[in-house]
Length: 427
Image (cartoon, rainbow, N blue to C red; front, side, top):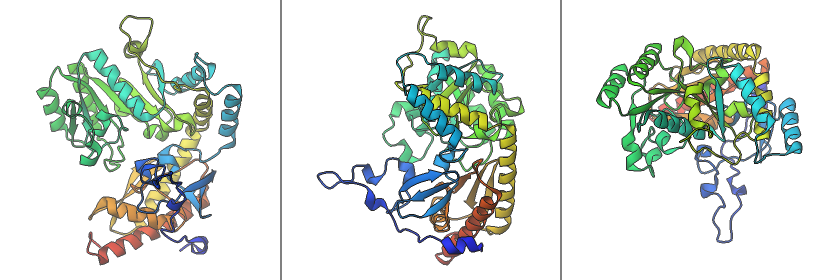
């Protein structure tokens, strides 16, 4: 084990949830003490106080290398000086306006330069909003209501997106939305063909993520993507490519790989430079649905859509994520996956591509194993996502990468041994 890690191994479950303030009647001011369900890691959730470069510090003073990166968003780490400077300049000139602003137009130019097959972009405040908006465009353009998703692929928190999850995710979603949403197994071409045939003339959109994390970070097969494109062309369906996470993997994203060009792309996360953002990108024909100068245009607002701070910070983030930076990240990811496959133990499968990697247990309760791994890695100074996904930032040094791999591999072996002793999984 790396000596550096031995010296700074952290105590697990010290917990700083106690720092959550309480209201007058004794309740935490945030439900469960958390502002997002995705923060939950058990009874005690550590609280972050600062981030810089590839590191964060929690309220107990523990230092961690951050491979969570706000759920893949911070591709350049925390407080990158060029991004901070851009955001500060934008704030000083006015953080938001009730008029069009030049930063939005400049960001759109930079974004569309990376996407030469598309013509226009409309911004929102999150990837969730972008997916919901793309579905609305598809329904308006086709006059249909139904949409096809891959089971457990995560597309945000709109009602239609939540319908793809388990029973807990679907709570509170109306029966009408559930009936409109067709949820199919990953890479099941026969099921896709049957669904389109059974609901011919009723499907507005097929929504695909080429590397869906919550569905297991298993890639969408090329033949499945091509068949989806073919079915969309034949039946007048809008193909929506979700690139909210995967846009970091190539200069122009990966949704159009293998000749499979989506009609609409949804983006978010990294394109805002750490600030709230979402986007729908498409050809002029479909994007004309937004044009307020034409009759019957879609109503689309949002007080902070395309705000100058997100646009200026995001433009710098996009400039920094050039092909050279992506190639380096791909190399780091390849190295990390190879070492983890060799060192994490037989109880884990190592998945991923480029700057994304994930450990997945080959047996047992996957969610429980992954949460155990989150805590075990945290104890060794590495912050993962609760699904055991890691997103590598451009500011990660080679030495930091090796320390992270050492820590994650050791954490994985510890979790497997403990789970085997408890009779959960292959051992």
